[in-house]
Image (cartoon, rainbow, N blue to C red):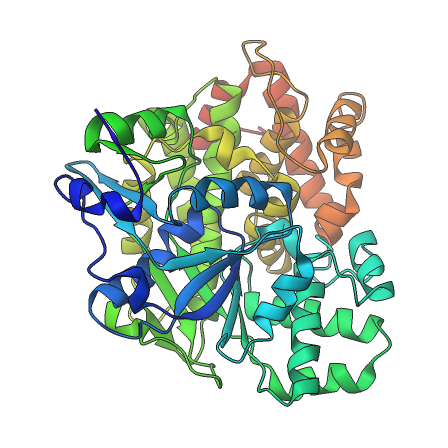
Length: 495
């Protein structure tokens, strides 16, 4: 027998799960967050919940926002349960549930005028976002804001009726400026190198396109965009998680969040409009986030990309199962130790070898239920951010990058559409059609896949990379994934 998640039922739910030590009437809004997905609810919302439970800063509650149909569906689910979320933290020897109540409202994605008016309210001092790597309108090859993206061009032409998150943020900032209200801080919580700088480039870039140079200058002088590094492995929710939440904890939650026990948040302390005292619940504030960010993106996110495609080609479903596979685990270890970690600069108070050991343990956690399909999705945005920068660094130093080229070749082989056993692969990538076209063309000409210059950039022009990529792709097609991994591990790949 399960109990429907709601404020009225928290008393009954408290027998099996931790519940908020505060009431809804104790909270006042201070943050509007775009992108109320699983990661946000397992990360930023959890940190705020912990702070509110400690009786601190309860005027920093969250209001949800979004611009997509996904946001609308999530709003319906959360509104029906008073914006509460069940967060289930799982480790090898632990599975514990808590209900978080840091969100007090979720704005209708179809009413953009209301969203703009809400972020123009003086009580809102931070506008944050988790909109995935693909939501920032970045040219993958250059790494810079793309002013020619159709959605950006449309918002530049119609600033009064914006459709993108950045267009809405601009409209809210314009209202605040016109009303003499200090601007809010814009805080990215996405896995992008220099996410604060990237966000600033998108906001200021769109302002310039709108032919309002004075407004763009005002943004540059008055709006803060702190960089941050965020980390917590958070799988997608499905029937498995919903049923587990009901049967194990007796909570009927329409969309619970399952995650690992570990979490990390490192931020620049640039909040002129104020911020919650998140350092009291484990957030690290530093002058320079870049070393932490680079470490995480290269070692953890690059590691995820490394195991995703061989896992998919070998019909492995769960991430922890890839770590149980001796060839995939050995591939990850050799690639990290010989090619990725040597490209990562020192990080304050951090041993990179210890960090990688932690990553291995986290990937191997069988309780998480993270899937290979989730790791393999959106590669057109993730490869240029998580894998190719390490490749580029090694090429610039005249160093071999055989393992990194193999990761790119595995990605190409994956986009042929079938696993080694012949099973059909289902893609989840906005560029899937052209990626598959290029992958199939590479059967006749291996370099056809590298002609995706918006993804590979100058790396594609390297003769050494072309050689290693071609060798790896030929081996994958002739001998299969497992034999190719073994050849890389023992040093026989490519002769």
